[in-house]
Length: 338
Image 1 (cartoon, rainbow, N blue to C red):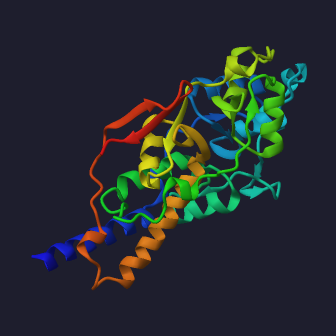
Image 2 (image 1 turned 90 degrees about the vertical axis):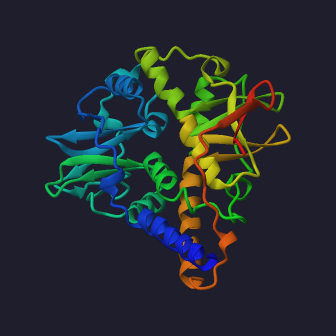
């Protein structure tokens, strides 16, 4: 009986891991792609991004991708002055395509066919330091888009039965960034935007006398253009930051953290120990760490096919109950119910 059960677990493990790594990008892509024309104004772009609740727009011409516009472009390229009214999407978008060839070598847009695997998609995202991949058909027309959130969902859906081991090698404290930049709540919007640009970050924890009281993100920069119609009515950080800040404990595994991030619909979480913030975790950290672990699991299963112990594999039961508690007045901690 033990041997039969062990073999079933092995088959399930192999199937789950192989399924994730070989799944075509077209199977998980978002086929509703929010696009915009290159000659539209930057103000129009901000309105579309906020209205559609997306962090990036595919710039298109005749159904084909010619570039991409992200929150990062707003932070690094859009001035906080009246000059914004003269800017068009083509002036700040990440790059341009011409006949399928990239005009700029530093182009931050990548396109791939729907039959490419998730493993290939993950490799490109990591190598190019980007968060989105445009999926194009054989004629080069936009068919969909794969984001890190799509990969995060795929991890949750395809390996939930085998991803967690009794001794998970990667905990949040192993993959978080323990050294992260913060900004005092007394600083202005302009200073915060400049710091995001200088440090190449997507968000900043806001502090008051050393205590984290909120978080300022790329989204908040884009929202300013939308809320003020481009007039940039600069506000103080307490007026635009989000609070309470969503946090997680450092001793949970990366797959639980991935699930919490999905269900809470966030791309970043602060990490706490005993109500003290000790690190910063992004969706980028999680997705790459989960794939790294799954790759190691695949090799382990292959090498230990005949001697793996039953207790080495533990089914990850559906944990729909995510509970929360206030770690402090400004921090709301999330974890999975045991």
